[in-house]
Amino acid sequence: MPGLIVAGAGGHAGMVIDTVRALGHFEVVGLIGQEGQPHDTAHGLPIIGTDKSLPRLFAEGISAAANGVGSVKDNGPRRQVYETLKSAGFSLPTLIHPRAWVADSARLGEGVQVMPGALVLRAVTIGNNTLINSGAIVEHDSRIGAHVHICTGVRMGGQVTIGDGGFIGVGTSVRQSVRIGAGALVGAGSVVIDDVADGAFVAGVPAREVRS
Image: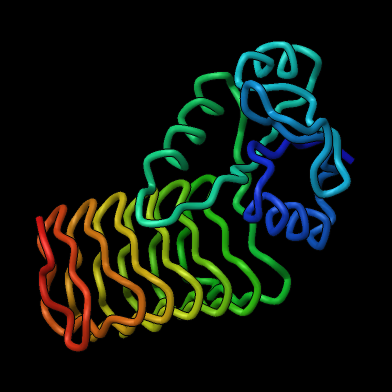
């Protein structure tokens, strides 16, 4: 079984490890931590290096990696991890937990993660490094950009569009055919019935702009 490293050592890394093991396609050989990490293990696995160790690990024959960094409001750190792994030569397999369901007609980019209980339905497209978290529903014909986080329990109607880097908070509902712009942030528990501009922060029921 080929080896795989997980970049990150926090809570989302644990979810990623569980998903990789449930799929059975790779063996997780260790984690990539941060400089000055106070521990040498996490989730029962060794922390085998930092970003600076990636060229060495790749040269040793480990060519697959998974992004174990989640995001709260800001997808920037997760995007940076993806780009660092790619620049070091690693491939990032798409990870679909066995208890998620993805339609055959859906198209998922590199490094997409679909967590337990999530549904990705007919003719959905999802860009690279996007996270569809536990229990989220992405309805038919929706278009999700790269580096997006669809948080736990989100419900999206059909034909929704979300631009690159968007963040949709826990338990949010999104009306069909709404467009949420690139880099937009939707607060937890919101109900989105109108389009959201690029970079805007909206929240509430119905969602209204809090700030740009």
